Image (cartoon, rainbow, N blue to C red):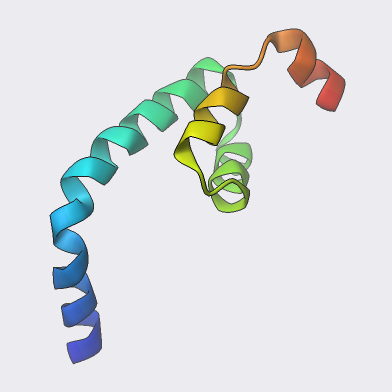
Length: 67
């Protein structure tokens, strides 16, 4: 349990930067009509946040071609 507490305390300083990005990505996923599963797959597969935003903002035609 001490390892969990130490890890939690180590992450606390970056939480203020993570929360707004999560809100932005959630809004972008919702606007792109992606399902929850698709959003979680994107978060897992694409680590770079800028790449996630660029991919979600693709034109609808490009997204249809990839389905």
